[in-house]
Image (cartoon, rainbow, N blue to C red):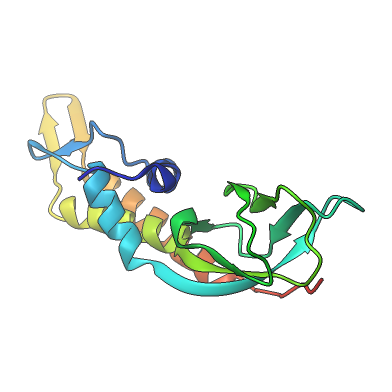
Amino acid sequence: MAVSMTMRGGVDWLRELAAALHTDSFAGTFYWTDGQLLNILEESIQYEDYLIYQIDGLVKKVFSYNAPKHYWLDTTTAFFTGTALTPTFNVRKRQLTFASALTEQTSITGHFYNMYEAAAEVWDKKAGQRYDAILIKAGANQLNLQQEYQHCIQQRDYYRNKIIRRVRTRVGW
């Protein structure tokens, strides 16, 4: 499955959070294609609306939206109330740059992906693959694959806990 340019950054960010490389293999099978990660992202989609607020002083061209830091915006789904202008996006910084100044309060609405939720899901799937991992001993050498399972569970719980503890505030204009 081909990933659109607007979602490429989201898939790459999920790869970082979940240590999901193209070359990951387990029991002879390769995992974590772009399509697999995109499907996991689709499960974490939220349709949200955020006010945008000015961050560049008097010019009123550069704005930010107060989505949580771990939300990824699919810019093709974004639309604005209060303006017909289309901005350029810096999704990781949650910034918008408009060609001309805005004159009234504006909000952004679109598909936001909860990256922590998606990362927890990937770690959960990794743990499921490694559930039956065993301790292998050959003479003085030892390979404990159970540690890999435990690491996946710890990482899953880490990202799930980050979801639960977040607090969202709205900032007006």
